[in-house]
Image (cartoon, rainbow, N blue to C red; front, side):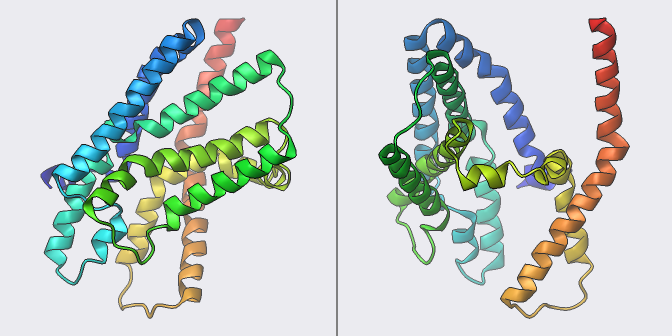
Length: 270
């Protein structure tokens, strides 16, 4: 609890995780490249470690499966806050519980590399259809499968151990078919040029959007009456303002540093 209270930007916890994953990624990449059998064995070992860590922590501390399941427990605010803080500090933000999706990305990159190297043919219609059905079903189940469903402790253990990995596999399938040139309308939407400037602002938007949310919520002087249209308007407005602030932040801080780095790189190359 004290750890959360002392954090300046609590949402930046994943930056530390991502840096740790980046540091150890050569361990997997080099082993897959030089010794594929050893590389796959190492990947399997770390998948098992992540699965076991999620399962054991959830079981030992009687953790919930999602943050939503914590907030619907009741009106006992202190108990809800305590459960939320424990969930965040014990399991949600730990690198050993978050490693599996990163490993899925490494495996996807390796598979795409081998397909290109071997000049593999495109998928047939049956394989493509089954892949879309399975990937969509698994991904949607991970996100919406717990709606109005209370899990037992063992079910929560399996959900925490598998949900992020399964969702990452669903995203990996979308990336795979788009790179392979078989994404169809999905690839057309994701490749739309309008996303390019927004994609360059995503990191800054990630850093500043909680500040926009906090400012908006703390500025309210009365309660809101819930309705779907109200939530949609707030959602769109907050996204717009988050990207406006991200643009300003990028122009003031990120873009000058990137430009300076590019100039130095070009100078050393010449």
